[in-house]
Image 1 (tube, rainbow over the protein chains, first blue to last red):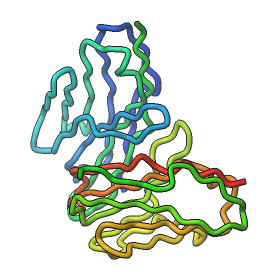
Image 2 (tube, helix red, strand yellow):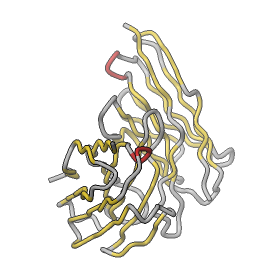
Image 3 (cartoon, helix red, strand yellow):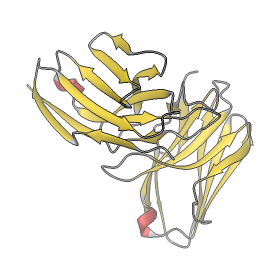
Image 4 (tube, rainbow over the protein chains, first blue to last red):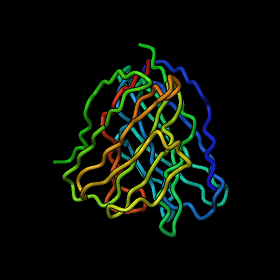
Length: 113
Length: 113
């Protein structure tokens, strides 16, 4: 089955800097890669996603890149703000009717003012 | 309505109690999910319902019993739980079985005493 590795587990940046979180996946058939932000005590919220036929997707300060050959994808946050502080999870899902969303272990991002 | 609603938000139960968690969505999603999340860990899939039929049971102990009475409702019946079952229980739904459009509810914080 699919296995998703996520690094780093913690990341501390200064406000205004960029933050990058990286994930690798094992199943070459996986074709959908969402990123979730989870604030303390709250639900995971989808912040951006990418399908396997796209190499990069951007939404304001957030971007995701996908390298299918290397089986890795990354989240890029530019001009970080204190409200970006949260735990971020990457995930992957396979094709062929697979319903199983497999999560990475999470990255705790702290943005220091 | 673009939300998944879970009740109750908090639940404390004894090991001999029987209780139920409820999840409701009115987005027309045909796949619904139960996840368990322990502190500082990613969500772990428990059950998947597709078109009101159970399609995945991730070897969950029988003290957890899911039920999907109709396309908008998902219940999780709890009986004879253990203290280690204390966690955040998240319901989610998606339009189809490919993960896109996954929406999480705000969760039920369960404490077993």
